[in-house]
Image 1 (cartoon, one colour):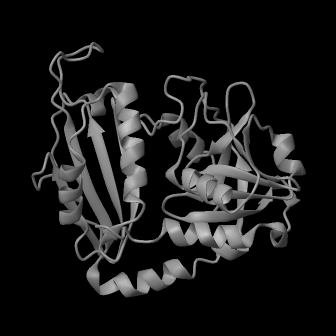
Image 2 (cartoon, rainbow, N blue to C red):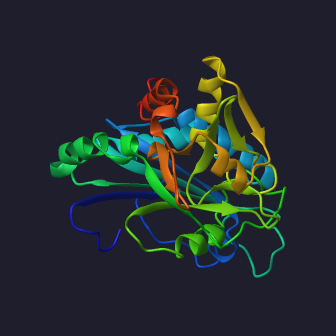
Length: 296
């Protein structure tokens, strides 16, 4: 795959072949015409594989994007994650190459890209221990508000499509190492998500999370928390939220398929009391998010 960073293991398959080049006419490159999934890998297996596969299928149906069989994706993913103790598997599907112009090709030949990024084998134990001891999981994180806003487009809301320019611009707004995430509003000022995460507020009544019906990504970790909370009897409401809701909340959480759950420690001068968070629920969600797929 070209020059790799020191102490990194990288493996890549494009349409099932061990290579890393792509056709310059590919619509994923030209237009962001495609979808992707970013999946945690533990002990040589992906985590929450079926959740990611389900979201990929839902997105493909909405974009009218042909997908390979789940069996093929699993076979290729297995080839890449074998022997990876701690890492990240990325699955990208584009509509493939086409002539110039936005018009869809009449006979699309999708491009299928899977690659793994992981610490080299001789460092995997140390990295795994470091991941388990990430202080942010208990001490929380500081977040800021991004000036970049999300455009409202219900047709693409929830999808993890390849056009992430809004998140790229939002993430470029800060460089302070003390800030781990930025929150994003939509064009009308509603609170939607973080640049790489979904948001939950903790209130006296239960949990609240922004609706993902006009913009934003419906994260797999968000979906898992919603299911576990419902099973455990927590009241969870998906609704339109504002910054005032965040400021008045007892606490707040961020979810992501790679880091799991981060409590928000502070935002815009507001310090949250982490003892008010539903820690049994958080621990259960974390355990499931980082559990290697059992039927692999």
